[in-house]
Image (cartoon, rainbow, N blue to C red; front, side, top):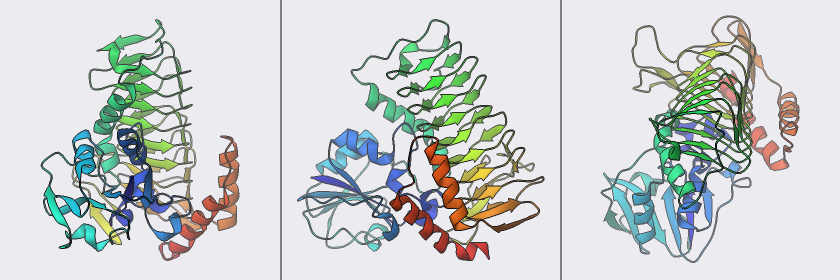
Length: 397
């Protein structure tokens, strides 16, 4: 048996985050969607995604496969219903296919996810469904994901001891330190939700943290950081300054003062010192962001939405991002004033204009950045970035 996570048409709606990963590899909480499915089912988990990502993110085969819409938070009731599915049946809610059970054969086509196929018997699902189908859904549902992952990861386990030099507001049992985690002289507030500190991670002195909050393995909160949950920072992140309700997928830096609010950053990003994001319009109206799927500005329906940034993107010191700015993969943003609300992938510049960020130069920078975390830009990684560069050529014109 196996679980196969399908992008199911959501991939283009989750750009720029999914330029470099399938939907199932997004990290809304402590775990990625795929990691949560694996821990909850103990089954092999694979990905059904766009062609150029399949070498890096392979499928999985088995005699019995449960195909699952990846853009759903794997809550216990949903996972249980998927595991109960029998071959030839599909889990359906409000006309939307959530999962399909089959014995071998070809995976369902993308069209099968938009309209329930007649060759499958429907099984109604009456439980809660939490969508991860737009970039802003990651920070919207971050708290729910952290609470779900926290229960999954800590059940039957004991936290490493928390130093007595810290101040705890709320229930201390909602703080969990993995092996090697260090927290000193900080204030941890669990009244809003749990706080999970990953293996080897560190919260330095003077930090103020409100849950729900997750700090990934070997990540750091810099001295005096102010973190409002729900927020999740993945492995190897370096975060300082003020952050509110934001998700950083991993390996990225926001190491200095400056505000990041209601935002999602990909991996291998770097925000220069005193980079600030606006997350609220002066009119207090709903925020619109660039949609790659619609090739136009799309209404998020949200009053608060900040920065949505793809992998390997950077900002220079004192950069100011307007409300609802979307920055593509390997973009380098700098200079005075507000840059455009859509900064295409592989561009270089800011408010005064954008130029092409040469592919080979971007690849060299990516390799150097990854070396600082003792990681290598593999041929598969390079191939993904080369394809993204080709696919986004029209954005740069």
